[in-house]
Each structure stands twice: as structure tokens, then as C-alpha cells.
Length: 535
Image: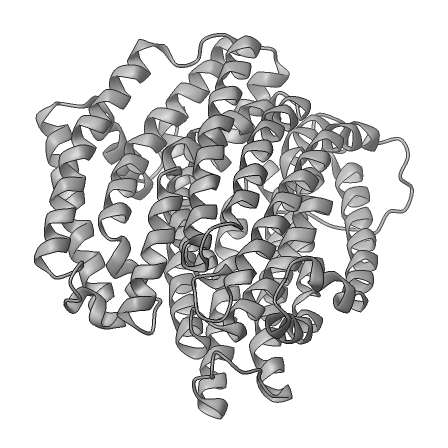
């Protein structure tokens, strides 16, 4: 079986899990927006409280558990015990550290939340939610470390499919909330029972997502025994590699804290952190399904080529990954830009809410393509066990984003969230430009004329596809209060219609141009359904 076929099958398995998870995730978010709304003190407090455990987790665990685990486990796997001692020590450390940190930050909720929330009415509700949301930190860490060990052993499916269980549990608790309490008033706090069901239900879903991976470990032939003898397995190499990423993530989350705090000033009647959260969810949809699924499969191979010092093969990995992901991402960007208004209506209680959210979504989408390419470049540095360089180019991005976000505090409240989203997009463009230049210095030219011609074809196909989508939006009344924004289901139907038109025009133009990437993408999908052949 060829490597391309293997990557196609593995990434398709990941993508299928991500698609199911994202569909359920959108159902969950749509239900959540129906329960608490998208603009008001209550939804902004809930989203701020949910953002905090993810922010703390990214600072403390993201560098150690995500950026460097796979290369280090692959290196440890070359030993006599196939890395078993390393994995046992690593899991033991992670469980202890995050258990202690979770207890401390949960107890500190009254002092922690004011860092993220600036409006008093929102803060009072957010602190109550935080007591139930902050325990998510422990289960996020457990899910990440168990999943990354599976990924390093090339067991990709469980890590991708586990969030499906999370969404099922969350949807069930939201449905129970509606049965017992009905739709909430977005301007008022909940009672004790509603708070437990809403915030506690979200934590229960993340706990289920983490704990189900223990079953996957058994099926993958992995066993865990607590090991407190932390010397002799070169854990210092992981700590050194994680150090720069830890610093990078601290700065990134500080930037996110500033964004959240400034956005909550608009809480109550204008687009704020909830609208930004829903818009980011849509923004991340194609990235999660396509880019993350593919690069998760590429990453171990990139790490092997980097460990062997084969920069030629590593450049080929980067080129192949960029050609495949950008083929789809240009189409996705065109579709989401054209469907921004009806897609936002699916998460909104009124046309006014939909238009306010669409403005934020469009501002984010302007940075989708450089965000995708940056992800590939960043993972290449991680494969090289180089976390210092990503720190450097992230620092450049943070200077741009923090400066721009602080200036957004001067905007009228109705423009605050959209202004922050636009600043994030500009920062991503700058960050990618710097990162690409640094990667070229490290491994040599990785773009080449072939990739350049491919990108030209994508743009040539994307422009008329976007125009066709906007035409459909205009005809269906998207700009004038027509059926595509009048209701949630109208928004859903309009999004599907516009998406189909954009996909048809985009693929049609690529077919007319005889783009070879189109056939490659089709084979990567169809290979997933063909039985493997023995060599």
C-alpha cells in the first residue's frame, strides 16, 4: 500500500470522526444558543467561565502534552521497552500535576474570573459558573495525554472519535435543561439547579471524553502502571522542548485574556465573547475536519524524517500537506464567507443577532488560509524538536494582536468584537509570513513552483465560487431580512444551498483547469473505502 494511500485512509478515518463530532458540536452549540442566547450577560458569563479552563490548560499543558509529546514518544519507542517506562512516568506526572492545579484554580475562582471579565453584572454570574467549569481542566489534560500517546503509536481513531461522546452527553444535559427550565432569560442569572445542569453537564461531557480513552488504550495493547521513579527516561528532554512552547502559550493566553476582557465590556446588548466563541467555532470547522485530520497523520512521518535529518523528505511532506489542505480550505473559505449571514442565523435568536455575528465571522475568515498554512509550518518545527523558533514568530504575532486589541477598546461597543476578530486575522498573516521565512532558513525552499501553480489554480477557482455564493445570498434575501436570516432553519437551509453552489462552481473550474490536485483529493477520499492489499 502506498504512503499516499495510507495517509488518505488514516486521515479519512480522522476526518469522519471529526465530521461526526463537529456535526454534533454544532447541534450542541445551536441548542446552547437557543437555551441561553448569543447576546446578554448570561451567555457571555457562561462562555467566559468555559474559556478559562481551556486557557489555563493551554498554558500549563499545551506545550508538554501536544507540541512535543509525539516526537519524544517516537524517540523513546526505539528502546527495548518500546517507550513503556517513558509513557508510564509521563502519565503519572500529568495526572498528579493537573489534579493539584485543578483543585487550586477552582478554589481561586473568585479571584481568577475578574482577570477575564470586566463588566460587574457578567462577572457575578461567571464566578458561579466557574466553580462547575474549572474542573474541566483536569479532564482536558487527561484526554490530551492519553490521546497523544495513542497518536504516537499510530492509533488515530480514538482521539478523534472521543469528542463525539462529549457532545452526546452535553446535548442530553441541554435537552434536560429545556425540559425542566425552558429557554433562559439571557439578561438574568440561573438558579442553582439550572447552573448545575448547564455548567456541570458540560464538565461531565469532557470527563466522559477523557475516560473513554482508557478503553482505547487496552485495545491498542497499552497498559498503565503508576510510576513515580522519574529519573532515567530522559524526561528532561521533554521539559526542555516544552519550555519554549510553554512560554509561547503563556503569551498567547495573555493575549486571549486581553481579548476576552475588552470584549466583555460590550456584554449585555452588543456582540461580545459569546458571539466571538460561536464565530470561532464556525471558523475552526474546516480547519478541524481537513487540516488537523491530515496533519495528525503526517506528523509522525514528519517527525521520523526530522529525526533522521532528511530535510528533503521533510520539505516534500510540507509541500504535499499544503497542496492538499489548501485545495479544500480555499473552497471552504469561499463558502463560509458567502454563507456568513445564514450560518450566523442558525445560532441566533433574531436577524439583528445574525448580522452582528456575521460581521465577526467574516473578520475571522479573512485569516483562515494563513492560519491553515501556519499550522503546517508550526508542526514542521515541532517535528524538528524546535520549539524556540515558534516562540519567536508567535511573539511577533502577539505584539500585533495585543496592540490592535487594546485599540479596539476605543471602538463603539457594536464594533468591538468584529474589530478584535479582524486584528487576530492581521496578526495571523504577519505570523505566517515570519514563520515561513524562518522555516525556509531551516530546511531550505519548501514552496517551489509546483505549489505556487497549485495555489494560483485554487484562487482562480475560488473567486467565481465566492461570487456565485454571494449571488445566491442576495437572491434569497440575506442582506434584506429574507428567509435565510428569518429563522434558525432558514439559516441552516440557506447555508446548505450556498455551500452546494460554491462547491459546484469551485470544483467545476478546477476540473476545467485540469487541476491534478482535484484527482488526488478524490483518491484520498475513495481510498478510505477500498480494502487494503498486501504487498
